[in-house]
Image (tube, rainbow, N blue to C red; front, side, top):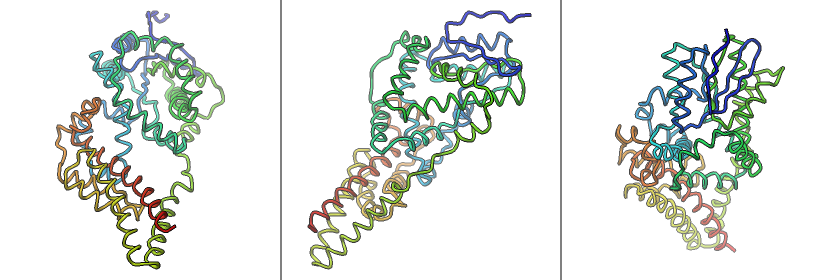
Length: 400
């Protein structure tokens, strides 16, 4: 008996892996039509497993919506994860805003897939790579100047207010338009395209091969973003691949460069040498150098905290802490200011619950106590970093 043919405007293709058929369904992550098609296909009883483009942490965020409310903000700051959390929120801001315009929830097709698969008692296979690993591989894959572009792009995703029509969203599933956009993206920044798109195509394809070889389901429905269709088709058809080895390779973080870790210590050494030279020449000169260091470094860190509308005591804390923490790269000014801000303005459950919704609007970053704490961390850190270099040049200028 042949499976009934279901009319499907979404990109749809079937590939065979051994005795297992894998049907790839390309979706738009903010399309109600995609969510409806997911439910229709799962309810058709043609499949005995459902694979979805989610990693364990994102799956947990969907199935356990209280996860954010249980987040220990102080621990996140202490472990140096504040910037990563802020980046995740900024990345979701554009998608959230478009979803708000269209009146649906971001990732509606994934939520529908999880719910429908559970109702049909079908196993769910999470095939995407952890988002934190992807972001870290992107970060490690680009030079510092392109990291600035990344930061600018994240800021733009929050600031932009361009409305996107539902017709535009639906056109994203037509394949050629989306693939052309990715091709242009790759030409402009191959370093970003590889870890963001190509590596995940390989990763998800390898996961599907492992599932097919391990559990041998008859037919898997794989729900993925339409932009991954072409790449995954190619990787799924590759023979003689060691899927486990591919997963291990793509989960490995590149070794950090030697100099980025050493440069801050070199700068500290130069600053301290500058102080020593200043005091050896004249006590007044040495004191002036130290005053320059405190005013410039502390002043810019305090300015950063002020821009983030930190508590007045946090601003004062930034001014005091930055000149000290800048002489010890193991402790950043942002860690101190964020800790002070959390103590003075402890976020409540509502702040955590509304975090994703609030950060979809620019004003929400300052309104929400969790998001504002992240801004305090970032802005005071950036201010202190700029202050370190400017104060260093000022000290050099006075000594020459």
